[in-house]
Image (cartoon, rainbow, N blue to C red):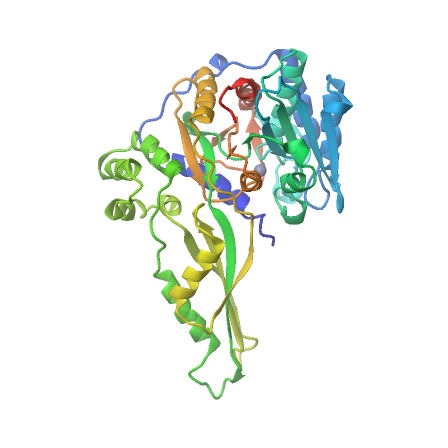
Length: 485
Ligand SMILES: [Zn+2]
């Protein structure tokens, strides 16, 4: 198991928490034909790119070269020159290829950059009802691994950039799309991390859009909201280890590694990190309160109103696990390993503690808090590994208003809601590099039928072409937005 494999699912769950609260009546969806779509030729192009890249099994072991080559082929066939396309295999992992393409602007301000991972998690053909690495059109959906995470967005970004190029659009600032390697497993081979370190000039952006986080949310066929991810909790895992000289189980002693660890875990189970809010979660509470009633609505408005947390309101809201996750850092025991055989006293007991830390809190500070809570210096707390932590990006009014403008034009009446995700994505790396980064996908997910990383992953056909149109419009909007850095 790797560290970065798991947060992906968490990210999507994090994004969906907005909708979990949506108990009020939702806005009626406009008739599908009312939503603007790209011109037919661009739809055909978007379809073909999508089909071709879904059929490449770009999992961690295989690398992203296959997808990269296809994208380069389409970009070149549609007007992009060698100078505009950078093909960047990773030095130590040459099958992990990144492609950075740039639509030149007038040089007014730093570029805006999309980051789009080309890799997917693997899929077992036996678990699926259709072949996972074949692009299958069925029942109004496109099926295949990556159709919702995130080859749909990859193809949309490629097709939109090509459309802008073909239309002769010259943005105020450069528009960059970085198609990147190995987000799902990441670590040494993660594309954005590699580019920032080894090819910083290619990714010298003032603003990053990561379509992997944030998206429209649908429930029972109704559009609920459109989330924009402005911050993420830091993902970090610790181990707690007790060692003991052990002995024969026929002669038990009071000092027992399992008991000692168990006592520490009980103390941990009763501990809660202090409730906190930040600029993003206060905006979020304000937005969702509008659809709530009674005490929940009042509590949300209370929390939205002031950085000073009202404990009673937070405590009530935190009864909902999804709310609890956004109200403070959390650490929870997830694995336990102790003893060697049934008739030996345990010489070792280890618990795995998984933490999601608020963006402005530290990994070291959390470790210190854990040590204090378990109150047993004989138990060693160690960091098992953590992802780069990126600071929260301020919920920038200009970025939010650009997104809102495009959302309003395409799906009138759908509220744009800033969220803090409980998981991690590649935006962590760009935030860590000091680039304000926002999770803005153009896709729509049915919150009760999330198939990312799961079997029979699919994308509604009509939704896909809306995603393409949204991407095109947002590129145009942000390419010319005057206040962007
Ligand atoms: Zn993804």
